[in-house]
Image (cartoon, rainbow, N blue to C red):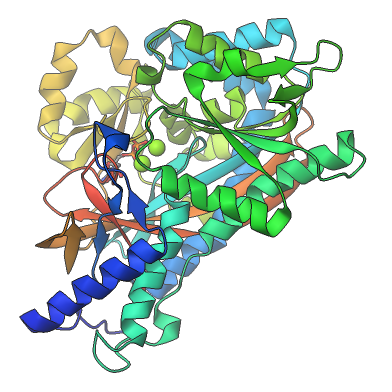
Amino acid sequence: MTQKDYPALEKEQLNKLVFEATQFGLSNGLIMYPPAPYLNYQPNLAPITLFPTPFPRKQFEKSLSVAKIYNKLYSLVVTEFNWLTETIQDLANHDKDFTGKLWECYKQASANGIVQDVSLALIRSDYMYDEILDQIKQVEFNTVSVSFGGLSAKVGKVHNYLNQIGLYGKDYYSTDELPISESDKKLAAGLYSGVEYYNNKYLNGKNESIVLMVVQPNERNAFDQRAIEYNLLSEYGIVSKRIDLPDVLSSIEINKDNHKLFFNGFEVSVVYYRSAYGPSEFQLAETWDCRTTLECTLAIKCPSLLTQLSGSKKIQQLLTTKENLSRFLSAEEIHEIGDTFCKIYPFDNTIDGKLAKELAFSKPCEYVLKPQREGGGNNIYKNDIPDFLKSISEDEWQAYILMELIRPKTHNNLILRNGEILNDGIVSELGIFGSYLFNEKSGELLDNQVLGHLLRSKTSSSNEGGVAAGYGCVDNLYLY
Ligand code: ADP
Ligand code: MG
Ligand code: MG
């Protein structure tokens, strides 16, 4: 299929487009707080593209068709307890600051007693379309605090609205070309799968529990989270309460006999983390106790410590080998998802590990070096890799993985950020949301859902695409 460029607009028409996009976006909560001092300021329109960005339909369909297999795979990784924990234990020795701490929390929780075997994951599997291979390749699989499901639905509606009122030109895009993500509603459905399980099992089916959303203090992206909260209430009648991660221990009560978790007198069925994914959130040592204490309650954790750890980049690397994959998936399933993998190398004593050490110095331009971190801004790219590796001890190298760079297609688009228009080549990353509810011990998959999509774009000259971090913007697909 040939793809059309975004419509060329006269200045006056473009101003109208910005005005209409802004009013529609603000009316619908496509907003974010500006950077520090945060809440002293009014929220603004989130950074968006003024036009949807072309994405090959076939590749979008591919990302959806592999979604449930990925969910199943990562649930099984957790169930394969010995394999997962041996990997994490080893990783913890090399990445003491975060993997090590999460692992300590798990061991402590395990010693104290983990009473809930059922665990919920709200995930986002991220891809880029590699232009040269004409295939999507997975960037990463996120198992904790995935964001932009709320805002994604809204940017899709903005583009659709601009198209409907004719500002792109008469019938410029057909409805079929602009898929609107329903991730704001569907992520609520994913959360509800955990709530429903809990209510049926412990409350005789009465819809009388709440979701405890554990958030970061001064969250800039609060409105993305609110969209899910409000949908959970309007669609399922379930209330969510928010608590800052460091304040958890002073705000909760736990029944000593049955380990039920209460917040302001409300019984909590699901603890939903929109926090606890980076070491900077744990400036006080006590904050780690919040994570451990919640883990030992009867509430279903989204995610549990093991489910969070299963999303380590190290696990992603291990799962790219057939040998490891065949522990979890059938030959057919492996065939389905296999071509979405990039080559990823460890820095260990295997043949691949030796190759990594060579490639990182001989061909750094083709690679990105990743630590076990989340939230953007942590990777080392291309020619920075050799010097970086030389600056740390070789023992620490094993905390990193070396990943082939995907070569995304550059498109022209206009980015609207803080009222200014940036005219630049952009590259995009597609995220597919999903949820799975499963028993970590038995491996029983109780629910497996695909929950909509997200397109994030960034100027092609920048390496990273974090929207809140100021690198990128929220976008939507124009399928061709
Ligand atoms: P994080 O968990 O911090 O989001 P990612 O693995 O998603 O880490 O990397 C951050 C960003 O770096 C991605 O959003 C993408 O823009 C870029 N990136 C990561 N891996 C690759 C890759 N293999 N090829 C090209 N760009 C990549
Ligand atoms: Mg991530
Ligand atoms: Mg990412």
